[in-house]
Image 1 (cartoon, rainbow, N blue to C red):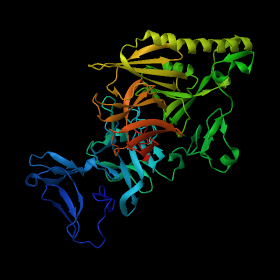
Image 2: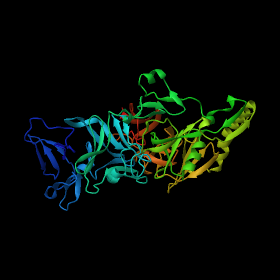
Image 3: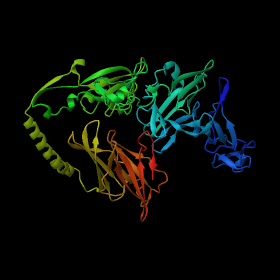
Image 4: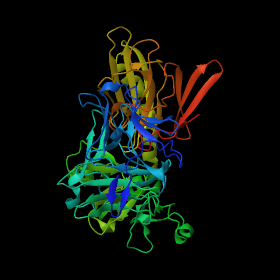
Length: 553
């Protein structure tokens, strides 16, 4: 517990899933004969245990200065610690986060009620994207997010100014697949982060007394995820709090006027880059412009472009990709682009970042004009005739340039939304040891095959097409080239051009035969347990997505 004002705050509960009876006055905390720390009820039944391999003669339970309850051996080595099993409070040096390679997640989970420590419906965690964010869910629905981490603070928490940042740390290791957030004990200042049973999130510190660094309160509707819907922007100090981004209008005036803004906004006019030849036989085509927006909580679901070095490069990339709807360049982060709906955007009076919104309104910029005087029938003929030659002839000719003598092969076909181009991936593996993989990618815009690095996985069913979903191509493969060895779900990320493993239900015997499919934009995993018995798992939000894995049978 920590003492806050005139009361004690409970910061960790061992048996929150299995409470003691209210009238049980004989409960005890002991180190059992097996060396584990155990909570016993009045009848000496074990309610909770550390459940580790230990030796009783050498075990000791120690409560450390920052609230970490530790089970140690005789050499003071940690065998178990409460910091590995957080409840609703993040204490100094305790970590929450995710390891995408192992699938291990550490989240804060709210109490069910003010006096009921059993798990509630609100969860606070860290996303594995780059840059990461703190993210809260109400059940499986997004509830709140902090905005992107800029190496010193979160973009969506304007009160998180420099004088409060000393204790907050977020460390991401792409190679190890880990992302963790924690608070340091800095400058003799004790602090913690807490998620309430009602979904409010507070960062509290001790100075001359207890004070709140920052708070995400459920009473502030702009803090609730997606309050103003796609392409809407929320401003706490405006009335109404929701408005459409420049160049957009409410999707439904009726709903908007009733104060239901979740339907969001739609663009008033199509972008110049979206205008096709059928619009006019002779026309003046202008480039789109970018409207600057200051002091913004940047939208969710940014694409991080690590290969772009400066703000001008970020702008040029976005301008050259019609699917790019907005961009932001943050010095400590780099280039971020948005190719999907701009959701959960907020206007601040200070702090925040600059967001550049793609617009067709040439009066708000200095576009470069390009005169095009083209016959509609001519361009249509060229497009159709060219498509016939490039699509039919290209795959035959280009594919022949890559030798087929390597052995087994699989393909997958998908679409790169940010670059607005089709992608074909081919994986070939040798039949003889040592097993060698060759990975090649074809993109429709460049019209060439390109060799990528190999992959550390092994094909299961040669010839089976990969499954495309959410910008990624999926296969079932093996980690080892051994018959009946464990299978893994592998995804190729089209944007980063890298292979990663995807979380799958841990109750599955992955030595069994498995198939992949897509059902209503969800990845489905079919497991054939025995003749006539098939399990179908609908992976509504799987490991590559920050919303975790939710499987139903």
